[in-house]
Amino acid sequence: MTCEEVVRQISEYLDGELDPALAEQLMRHFEHCEDCGLVVNTTRKTIELYCKAEPAPLPDEVQKQLDRAFAEMFRRGN
Image 1 (cartoon, rainbow, N blue to C red):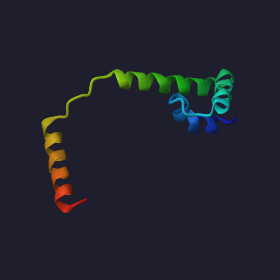
Image 2: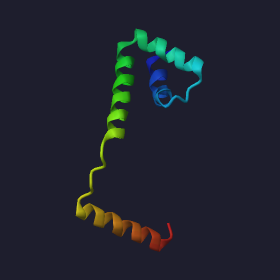
Image 3: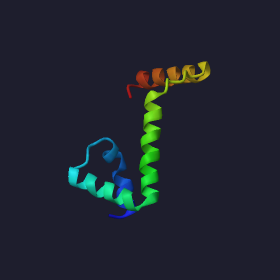
Image 4: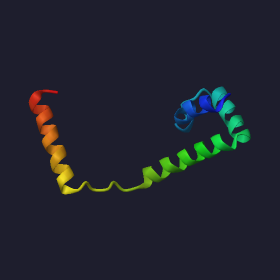
């Protein structure tokens, strides 16, 4: 398994959506490839931090622009 193949599968691997045999291949690759191991661990930690974080409020002007854009989009029927 190449590093490129591993990178394409990281999301499914972290979500637990890979076939067990393929997941095992990725884990073996991580044991021998420091770079891919670092990528998967960093991605996992980033997801964990993101999931634990509180949403940041939008600045008032940004919220107003979004509201106008959505209103226009719905007015046009998109």
